[in-house]
Image (cartoon, rainbow, N blue to C red):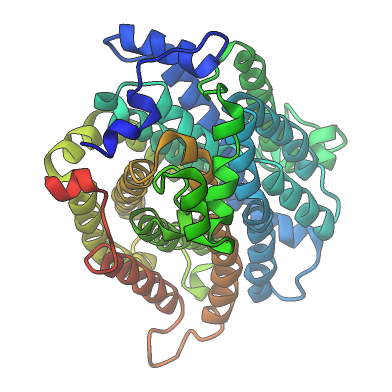
Length: 486
């Protein structure tokens, strides 16, 4: 209890003019859930997630129309690098955005990130070359520092008993965005072909066949940006001379003599390096492993479902894939709002992650055999498998959010989430490129003896899932003290 008493969240001294103190005072008087602030959390998380995977249903056709792939089997190779460019850009800047959120506030960083979504997501839809598509996706990722600050913000706007719900909202909106985005891409791409009575081939949407889904996301993001003008700030801005640089010092502490820092501050906890906080770092490692898996799965799912049956795919259209993902998105929303908080309360974040990972593996193993099914059985089985797989994935990610945010004090949460975003973005940048290369290679080995065709792709996804599962056990995972006591 002595260590907890040093936390800024537990001090009841309020400083005039400090937005963080003003909000804490309001929070102490409010017993129920902060529904308005939770709505901000949900909308911003959805804005951050929508552009990430909205391109996957039409990426196969976009690469085909940009004429960079010489053979059909090579489309997956080029598609992987477009998918990776977003995450590579975010990998380079996530820690910087986290530090900025700890220095200048959550609100300005969040608003700038939303603004970047409006601009660069629109430009991506107007891409006329392969390199323009890669450049706009890279800049969209590099300037979009939303997820780290919004995770810190979600914890700060509510009382401790509502933290699971707060972080569940982040992962719910995130998971929903990763489903609704592809659904939009699937339904609205190539509108002149799908809706010729509404969109002429000579119109803007006929000349830029992938602009409409990007425009819809950008319009929603613009509306969220305007609403954020009234969003309250939660960062404490008093005693800047003492505490203002702690996030930077936390990230740079591994470059400075620790003994010297202790002598200067007299407090090891407040200056503790994030890199030496093993409960945080071990949860980030797990987060990165499962993020790699989820991103690779997202890339593979659309490529596999839309590829021809002779290559081991399902020969589905972008509309069919969009419909599957829309159904999955609705289930994710219901699950995260009404089911996951109860599961977390009973099992806790660690056991729920372990059980989810174990159940995922046989489901992934069954995917390649769906190519032997015909309608309507194929649609029923595919929808059920997608719903279960994505809900289990969101369970794992939400649980790692909880572990990460409870491993650090408030003045390090922005930097900690930024560090997690950097690691996660690196692995999510590698995942689409790696998945695209493996998918392209697998389609060329349809008659191999060992896991022929797409069976190899899903086997490798299961290997990553198994690695993530192993990392959730001791000694790899070190949990915060409150979970040890339980």
